[in-house]
Image (tube, rainbow over all chains, first blue to last red; front, side, top):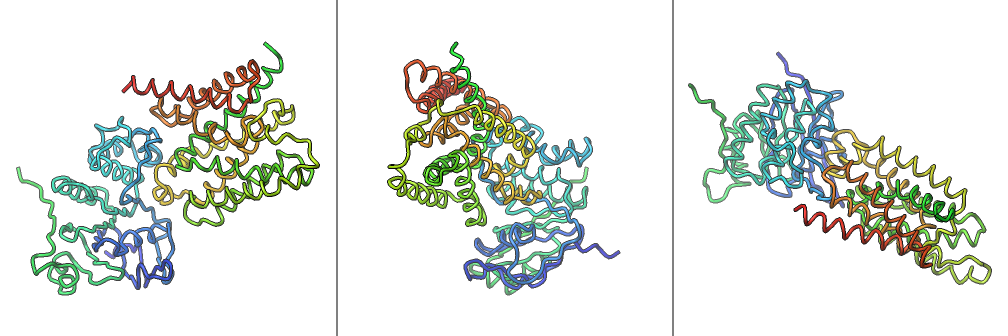
Length: 239
Length: 261
């Protein structure tokens, strides 16, 4: 069955102060797909996310979205203002409650492991806790497309594994589309349907395994011929 | 108690009931200079009011509104501290530059506008303050979640469908309006302190945004009452007396916070 087209970016470019931050970016995203965008810092990954969300608009080209596409966005980092005294529970309650059934709320809190920190003030959270809270907030909005900007930034290896496993679980249980952005060139989820290497323009794209052996990728991002990309695979242990 | 004193306290209470919640939002939006800037720009309003012989409160409101609109129009992405400072001193200097041209044909005591004088507040202005305060509180009520989310993270707010520019414009116009209305009581030089000190003290006592709002109003009301009574008793200017009272309450809140920790 043909999957529904959620997003079609057609030759988009973005200029700031007469400098191209992004040029000629084209790709499509269908329902249920995961796209991972990797690239160095300053390569325009977050700018692309903001263009898709609509915070900024392309200088050239068009972004066509499915009508009323509901997007959930997890920003790269949120600069927490300690002057706003707000608990995790309150922060999560702005939207989600109206959309999800009580069962789903419980499930999302459980999947994202935030049920034990609901009464903490958000400015007291550790980096990992904050990532989980932001992720739970995205899920509670019940979006069709989740844009996760550097979701594993600041997490240790085990934290990253947990996070990727969470994404896999979400994909299989809630059938969401995901655009995941990472500056970490070495770890990409194996379940990604498409990996895009972005450094102001798309240098190469394809399945994770294809990208691994892509000469363009190796030329662009490798250091001294070592294996430049490894994929995270989520496996379930058999009882 | 003296009837006049009660009348003055009512005027002060009406104003801080909306000024302090706005102060909380100013703190959350991290634009503490905004209050000062509007107050500085109001000097130009006072001078223009005197020159053109129009009601000074209305002149202050108009100039403050122009100031807020200019800030929004000239800065596309967010409210910038640098622009606030540039415009603030631009408006202030223009006002001060024009003072010598009006000084010979006016009997108005500019000192009372600088440091506040509750004696200047008349019945019509109290009614105006009451209407403005109710309007501001209603605006905060209807915009509450949006204001809170924008304060936490603007990008999150935009992706969740909040029109950032519109909320920013509304917020700046309303704050400018309320500051302009309050200037006669607290004065140009100290109005920003009244906006910031009670809300910062409230932050020390609060664990939720709603709590912070109510504590800021309570602290504002206490500061106004103590300030006006002491101002009446020792014949000091009302503005500094109110601010000193709120400063004492701020120190008490710090002590409370350190004991709780």
